[in-house]
Image 1 (cartoon, helix red, strand yellow):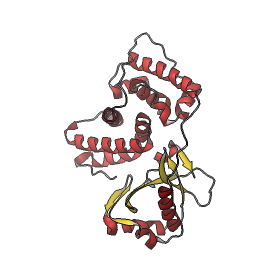
Image 2 (cartoon, rainbow, N blue to C red):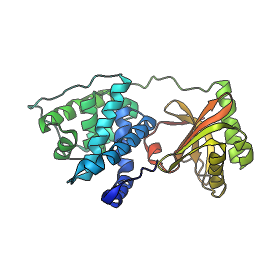
Image 3 (cartoon, one colour):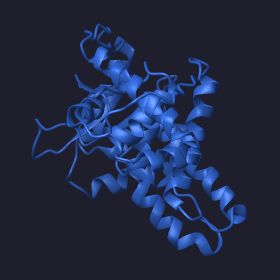
Image 4 (cartoon, helix red, strand yellow):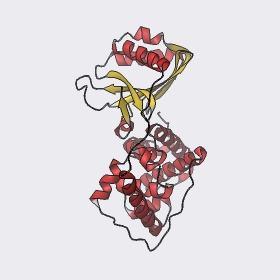
Length: 295
């Protein structure tokens, strides 16, 4: 989603938003446990940042300022979802190993659902240091938390991640209903055949499109132009699958069909018609840490 940035800050923050967007998404996705929810939180945070700019005055550390807004927006999201309590882990006597490659690898490799099993204070500290590489001082300034509290959260969060790494993943394999499979396969087959007129015939009158990090379109006429863009490029082949247990279209490089999908597209249906499309072609960072399953 493009966000218009007002006034004299326009050029600086437009560039900063673009550069930091993948990094901010990694943080938001791990805080929410979902690359999809993480994108929602990221967009909300960027909109809040734009709204705050006119009255913000001089911003000494724009990156830290943006991360603080993203952090607070993620907390708001979690409170709305009302699934967990925000813990305070302050313990001034806790000693933490600040440089440990094994711990760094464990945190970077942990699945998003694993991070969700950490209390919020532990989760945010581990993400910022072990996944994104921030220092204690930077984390303290961003989260507005004392360094002893961050050390304690890191110590406990890392310990819990080690415990969770040894536990089996016994979550059920997601499945498509017969109706969902039929609709998804029909869309994919027509798209891969480049029969975009047939694809347009599947659209609801009030269909909505979000080309994530780029634009939004509404209605059959506007959304119909989106398929023309795909007709002009050759770098995609669609396959059915799941993103975080949600039915999705996974997009592969046709020249390397065994490689991991490069991005994904989410569809929503209403009465057998396509009601919404959410295409992550220009937000491929979301697929980097997503749990993807090809059918």
